[in-house]
Length: 173
Length: 207
Image (cartoon, rainbow over all chains, first blue to last red; front, side):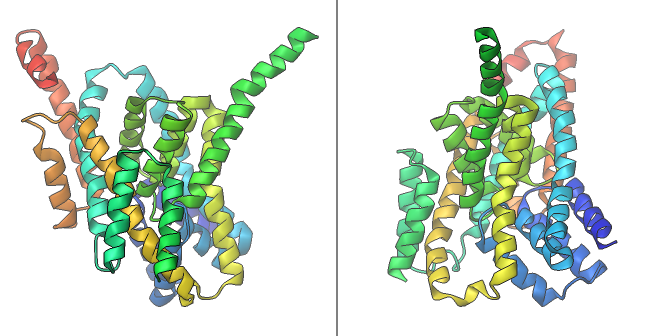
């Protein structure tokens, strides 16, 4: 029964979740804390902090975590899979349509308008992360500038940059 | 015999090896993406476009736009699309698995064994370093995308308005995406109506 509930909750979120992890986690909160009352608001806040600190997409982390607390390993697999399922179905439909009608103006023009909007979405995601929590000292500013330069001009592998930034944070902490 | 070997070799090359390589790339990316799906863009681009050259820069831009216009986890959409583009259905499956698996393993291990990860000073110090790095890794692909969008006098306000609506007014990205698609369809209708009588307008816009 719990498995069916997990499936249904995360399937809905995968189907209606737009615009990246941060808007999806508030949807997950509504289901998990308010509707099903699987955990308290405080517990969810802790879980969310953990999801942000561990690698990977935040919504996948949150789904796995909620699934694990409710139904063990099987629960976590079901929660994550049902979160991805709408994507799989939609992508399968859209990709074939997209490649078939790529040259149609009804595909081209919306893509052309989407482009600057998506750029705006991504840049605002970066802007909204710029708070005192992220820039706690002058070292964070140096790390930020160094990453921009290394990534933009020298195309250094981002994984390397993340590891280096972590090491610098550890050494300066 | 040789022909048979060649056949299997081809199958492996076309499906399994490429898909396994994709799986491994996305597994590494999934294991090192901090700060959510957007932070993944820089890593995916580095792996698929710059190192392996499995797709062009323009195709990757297309991928980001499509992945963002569909609901669901952005990182998973991105993995599915690039995986399909590179190695068809098998590729899409393996790429998605690679992107999701590290998260699942790490979360299950943490949920099972560690009570309070915030309690360790080392963890906090490392994250103090990673956070500004991640912001830069989201900002740079965003700016690259802006460059790719080839803004003109009639479209330069779109990203600015998007930023203002999201950052200041907290508008849900869903409405902006729907508005963009509707606007694009209206624009397409308008140009189709006009191309017969007035082709100059379309030329002006493509410049």
